[in-house]
Image (tube, rainbow, N blue to C red; front, side, top):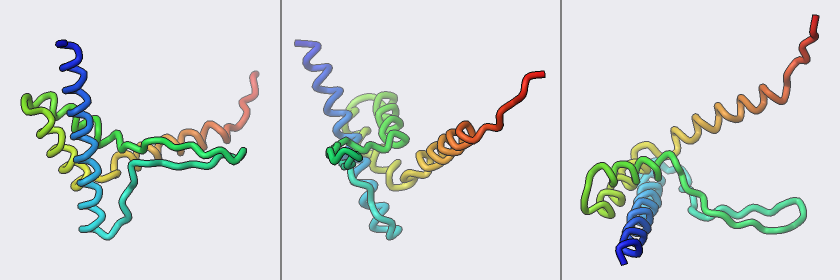
Length: 118
C-alpha cells in the first residue's frame, strides 16, 4: 500500500507541474502575444502514418519537479506554482538555446572536411 501511495503522489506532483507549465505558457502567450505551445505534438511521417506525442518543455518541467521536491510538503502545490512561474517568466528560452547549440553541432559534424593522414 505504501508503494501505491508513493507512486500516486509522484504522479500527482508530475501532473501539477505539467498543469503549471501549461497555465504559465498560456499566461505568457496572453501577455507577450506569442503563440502558446500545445502539450500534444502531431507529426505525419513520409509513409503517411500519424505519430502523436506529448510535447513537454523539459527545461521548465524538470526544474518545477526539483523545486517541489526541495520545498517539501505540499509538493503538488509547489510543483504547480513553480511550473506556472517558470513557464511564465522563462518560457522556452533555455530549450531554444540548447536546440540551437545542438543543431549547430549536428550541422558542423555533417559538414566535416576530410583530414588527410601524413
